[in-house]
Length: 288
Ligand code: ZN
Image (cartoon, rainbow, N blue to C red):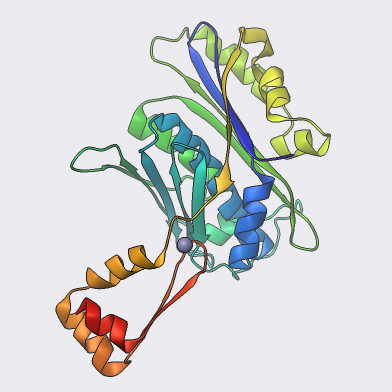
């Protein structure tokens, strides 16, 4: 199944919802960063959520960055997405590992630890919008749902799942987000909660050969939903040598002169896609 995200409205516009299937892009991230299963789960959950949040912004130019930092061994994860279904990210310590929970599940919350979630939205204004909150559990979905409620005043249910195989590959990944729009009927919450409790999990759904459409049908089938958009999502990094050059130049004259004097060259590694960029002395002198 190729990765994609669907958007829907339900209950005469009182609900908006998204469901995504993201195993391909999570696999790509795991391969790029050589992550342990728990790091794959943490990063995969965040990449899936960020791809949905990028699409929510609705404008092609909008960029959203979600950073989760904690005091656990993983250190945290970061993801950036645009409004066209393109997402990229990394884990601070991709090889960090922790024992599974007693129920056998990957302990993402334990690997992240206590910390903060920061959401930066570049909405084309002079100053980007920044929301910052303490983590609820480090399990990612709860932390982002709490951000939606407290920073954006939008009651939300977010579920994220990544199923990692014994060989470290990602078998299934995805998630759904359901949000209540301003002016919603309070009875709607109880009916929705019932549906959400009945629902198993996204990865169980996908393991049974079902799709994001089936996820929304199961959750919103009783609420007169309508799918309004279907967008392919992918892991994509827009770095190139010119961009990296710009970053080096922005270090400033003094620092650049120091690099030339001390190293005579520069190696820059893109955090998102692991591409190595090499600059020899002549290139660095040119920038100076
Ligand atoms: Zn890159």
